Image (tube, rainbow, N blue to C red):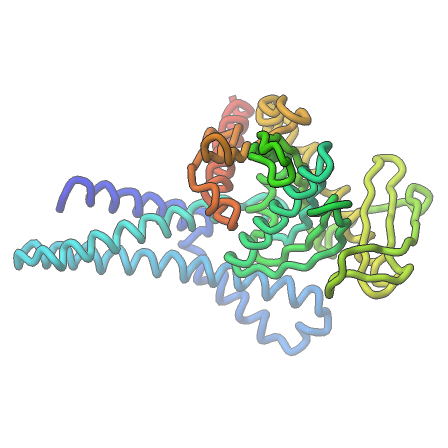
Length: 375
């Protein structure tokens, strides 16, 4: 077996070891039997919320076992094919198996990163907010480009995307937009996107074709599970109703049913503009609780995040990524140094590389912090 192929096999086995460790593979079959026994309990659905939580936990374990066993089987099969091909001097069989192993390495690395999404709320659905910065039409257009980028990314992941609210720009684009993105690990993946995103390009709105710099903020926070208690004092909130506006379409409501809730102690403002005022109040309260929960998560992780935030002095003081379309093409994450010249791919939702790099950095930082605490 070639040295390069041996290294690939070693990398896949390392990923398998981590996957096994994360799910405690030795006890996984026993835990799955316990889940199956509880699922068969005829009284399970007397409490739908508890039943749904149990079903989600069971499915996570099933997926983890299937992923591990699938990668392990594919690894063994392709190693055997290479050995057989080398014995029979069949270069084509060896080449096909080596190509399969390269793809398997990428899959194993991706699943390894997903296994690191073990934060308190990583598995949750998520809210994502985009707000245009100073710069008028330029920033509003940039906000619309970011919204499209994240919707494309979520759709590629198979996640469900729901537009919660949207405020159009005066001439083009959007001033702000809020989405709920639903799917396993939606928050875990997207949480690294919070911060200021900077765009440099030749403006399509400038007759002189000058280069412009635009900023938008992106904030991500988890949808709070019903079993997480977040207390909100009614005296601490102000509820306003207003007539929502928009350019038209299925997501735009033109009645006075839109709801805005302001949390006075923190200054947090959340909005919803669905079809009914009652529904909007419920959605907005859930969003507010999620924001408050996110603040608590940030407080707990302050030491780990401090180093990352200190690097974001450009722009609004929390810049995380630059998207340069002119005079050259480059997207670079300022926290990890990860970059690519495929700007079109990124703006079409190819964000996994950036998210994976940040996730790996965060895990490394967490490990260092825990090691220091132990000493």
